[in-house]
Length: 412
Ligand SMILES: [Zn+2]
Image (cartoon, rainbow, N blue to C red; front, side, top):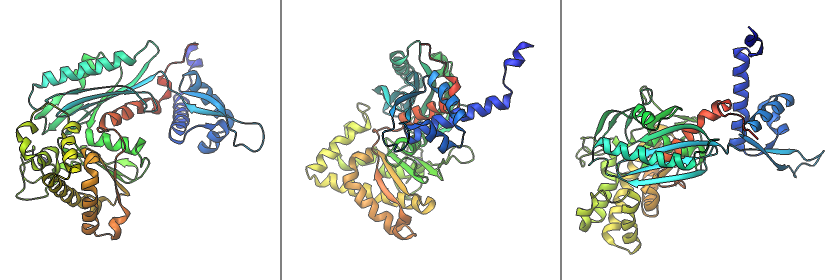
């Protein structure tokens, strides 16, 4: 068997794969550096690093960029940088009012973004999935070339997801229960790469943890205001998932026993108090008829409240103060439980932060047992309105960071 002679033993193959992954991640996470600096940071010897880098360059995943002028001794060293020009990762967010499809390169830079307003709660599932597939296909057609490697596709949904089965178990605001989505989308898009489905809050937290302003903060909580309120919790650098992957449903923390009815059918959930609809009804009572109309995404609907607050409208200002108070009470529970270094507010909380953040922050400090809220800072996300599609693309790109050899050699 001549092939056996050419093949490397399995453990040798996996050692090389791990080392390729190690070097690629280092260049991604810590930026450009020389081969010698890669060797120093990874503990690999220089000859091994040279061989790994040569392979990563041949696969178009790393490129040489200029020299390190800071070097005081010896000749300037050539710097290496993440490349990945032919790699595309696709993140898709399915939410109640909108679809968001984002194709990025390996570094997470946006290549194409497609968004569409929908009424997922009022239309058939089939219609929603058809729109989603069509939007994803448009984005893929736009970025794909014969040289492109699609790293993967990850779909974010607002609800409980069986990640292993690629099924939505329960999405209260979509009114979806036990919907198989992964295989349907894989088939419709003729995907030959793995597709994942995950909770939107988890993927938003992943985006914040990887590329947000507080990237790399080991204990980080992300809370996002959309139609509902979602969240994701990073503990010691890991996304908290729980026994069946259903953790971090922060929007359904019971905050008031006699509170308003939530989309999940229970009274007094956090999202029934601080979500988009209660805020719109509270701040814009004269616009009640328009609020439920599926004519605009949350980021558009929230603008009117911001305009009125800026103009000093008393009703809007009071509604924002109430929102900030309930926001603070829920955040205090999370801060007491998880002692995060930072809580990042995303979605429409970004837009109303000038009014709600000071109120919420004061309440968190009052209701947290640990002095100074355990050192926690409450901040506003600098990522786009919906971080979940970005988190999806980051998640999808992981496949290439785990195994760079998935990307074929670039033909000159
Ligand atoms: Zn609920």
